[in-house]
Image (tube, rainbow, N blue to C red; front, top):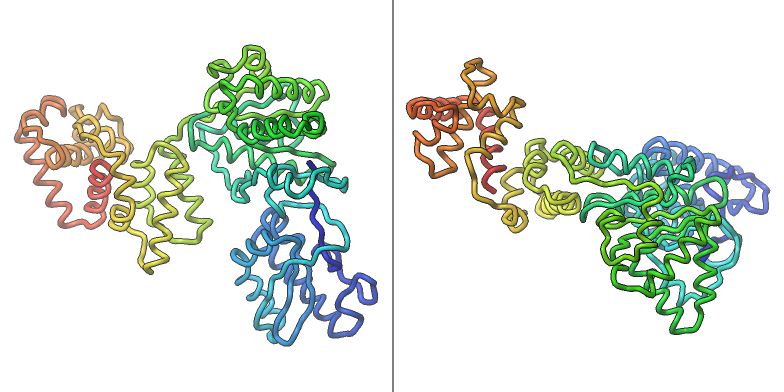
Length: 487
């Protein structure tokens, strides 16, 4: 299925306005020429402000329509783009226009009317198929909406945070998206647990391929959508059209392949589609929750073909990666989030990135709604239901591990005889927390710290209590560790 966007007779954002041209909606007057020059400068400053990638994704197709009184009208080809630009960049556009032309008080962002010249979609509308082609669509509007599998505009390579657990999968995805992959990358099979970034990488590849200079047709859908399309084609007796449509694409992307387990008819159709595309030199990209060899319930011949290309695992996140993801998301949201809050979330919410980002979204929304700063107290209040799911019985071993990680020392130092301050102080903090957070007796705690006497534990508790009263930063450190361990 090939999708097109119809745009009105207005200027492309990257083509200079020429007075007297038939495509110049502003006419030939000096005032209009000045307005065109201002628009050119606004575009240049806009690209500098938001960066080339975001500009190309969201604002390249913006076109100036005209000035009416104190209102500038800017046109975009789709409602999706109009709504997104209005929400994300409306204030910036207005500010830039006002600095160029003080007479402008408002920027009105509208959708271009249907008809006129045909433009190539460029991240304009989330869709199942992104095509650089002017070939007419072959299915009617009703079937097109049934086919659509939306691409998330947030899921690009620029917003994907790379760390040790996902760097290999990221490098493979980038290689395929850049068009530099060898035949050994076909198919590319991405696998990993829920919420670790597989779908993000799939969408990022689709967005990147849709912007390639050469013509390329990308079909992205979930395995469930593939099955529904196939069943619908059987019901309408249009399987030939279904086969031809999918086998005519340059890149086929199928997400969550494990959904086809136990669906033998759909598996067989996917197998034949797979073979037809690979034999034609077309690219296949697949994701699933397990590696091909572990996908029980998938036919052996299909499992073998899936494993014959590049298989990349997206591992569970580390603390460092989770913290980097939170920092990147907070920076994009433009909301100040204290480092201690992000450390707390990265330590507590370990299951998957989706839950982690959702927790930060809730905190940010709460801060906006109630005009309050983001704090540890707010995190405990707003996320109590989510954090409760991570509750567990606290052990001295766990306290030692968390304190050692926090102060960047080896866990073995908790039981060593070394008395250097950078070792002794974390050890005292761990003893203090063991006394506060467990029901173990002082002698029992002492034995866990290298068979120390109970009086050593008493001294540690007293010393930490004293330091917390005198040093606010130290008290906050201990409080953070306590929250990480208890909430």
